[in-house]
Length: 474
Image 1 (tube, one colour):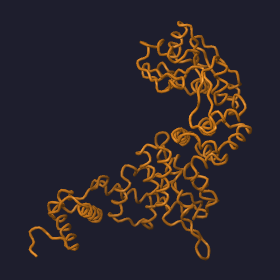
Image 2 (cartoon, rainbow, N blue to C red):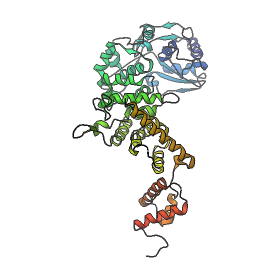
Image 3 (cartoon, rainbow, N blue to C red):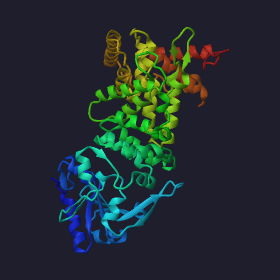
Image 4 (spheres, rainbow, N blue to C red):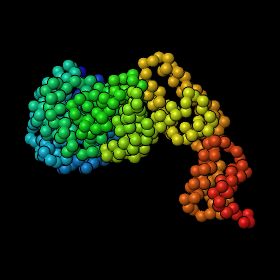
């Protein structure tokens, strides 16, 4: 029932020859039982293989010298040695026990002396199963296989102890529910709720990594709802519970929180080739500026003017705090800022200038912006939904037609900064940037007009500002 990757047996034989035990452990065993490994190459389809052993890290390095094509010792302080072999990464960790000091951000590690002691300290029973290599003895001391078959998430020991050892396990439990459909037991949910505040001692990088895995999971909405319900979002992504009870201006949903979850699901339906992390984050965060911009109109009604601007700034601040890569944060932030732009152009009467600006401002995120805008339509009024879809169809048709005539995805002013300085006889300064921006706006409005017309427009602009024109007498 469980196929052991050939590369694991190969390494196991080396350890056995030197008198040491080696077991495949954790996610590799779990995923093999779930049929999530495909049998590709020597790793069984797993990008990484995790092992546990009685050998100390220095001994692991000694035994694998010459077999491993490369080694990583960054985790050696935690008892982990990384090995590379035939394009695969293998991590070998000495039996250990670890726990968090109540006020520390990092685990304290001590070596254990038995496989059972190592497995009992693992996060969940489904990750506490092991298989010895190369002889394939299956070890399941805590009922992990039964929990897997029942789609239950449970800790090997008391959940309070497990979560106190490492509060990040609260997020891991949520992620496994979203990723694998494993429902945490009521006892585990209670422990998660009681200890959600302890996530504040965990490093931003570890929290970020779990949230990024959660958002690209099979059912991120289930995970995000659990994140809010147990109080973990308040310590990691507080903007999300902040959306609750903020009535959506369309009055078609109970609150903006429910609307957001619908938008996320609809965005997922539009994905082309697997999970699109940037699109999903943009869908999740697109309305986080609404609570701060909510205004009640006289006589009823609610408005959220400029929530896309406030939301852009809130999104950037949160993603920076979570240490997101800059390119990912930039893409998400841009989409949040632009998600309302389509609605600012009325009912579809798009000028060429407006189309050029829309495409230019979206840049490489244009396709994602298309999907986000379409996903943001959650009205239950079928007539209104169909009308909005037609208007956006019309916009995409206009973009395609204009793109066939000119390179609208890479619009630049017809005059470069060097051209502007030469024509106006000025040196690099803020004035050059202002002139270039004007010429870019002119390009949006007029399209390609040729160099002579572009120069004439620049001179007209300079004249209006009272700038001296080279060659003209006072």
